[in-house]
Image (cartoon, rainbow, N blue to C red; front, top):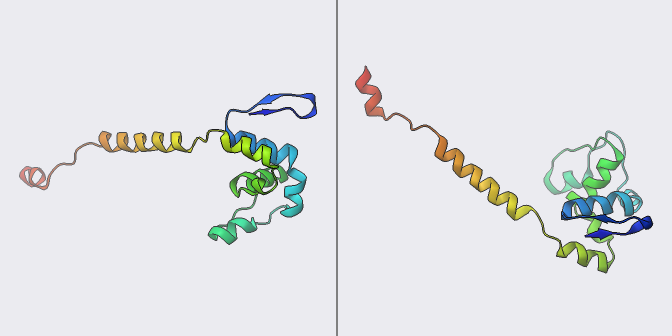
Length: 123
């Protein structure tokens, strides 16, 4: 996807990278207004959704975290940009297929365990 702001053009091939860019450079102030950053404070959204404790280290990390991980950027995007984002490919299918392949390989590479019979014959 193409961003043409400030007389610059930038090409994005990954949806996640485009969402990070939108969160930080175009909607950062709005995200911070709705979800203020306080150094050392845990993310309320993480706690509310999964009871996990996560404290972003910097304001920029917080903006990306809230915008992308918690998908709050989608609430701020104009329809035409939202449409562009939804048409971009996601990496989830590729990652899950690669993870499944790695899992299978690790299962295949495990050395065969000796049977109980073989162990008792050695004694």
